[in-house]
Length: 121
Image (cartoon, rainbow, N blue to C red; front, side, top):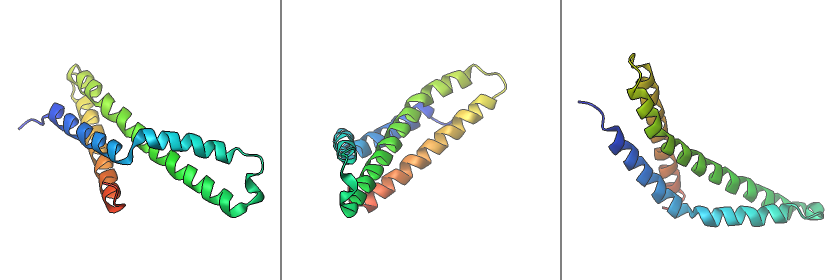
């Protein structure tokens, strides 16, 4: 039986959207802006403990944003990969597209579990 690529892509897109809502991407982006401003204060390191907290939190927030936006971009690229693969006669592009789909599914599943374990979901 042939894989239902469109259905799989739609399902992982919906899962990612749910995760984005739970993690509140716009709020994270606003928080990153605030933390970047706080980290740019000239006397930041006058209080090393506070500076460490700010820079650590900024790093975590930026990492989460990068992960979400990267996954979103990959999900959006999947239909294009499958469209291109359909025009290749040898099937190698289809294998590449399937590999990317499997990789994205795995990454989103891992993010979903992490989000659940952190009690945010």
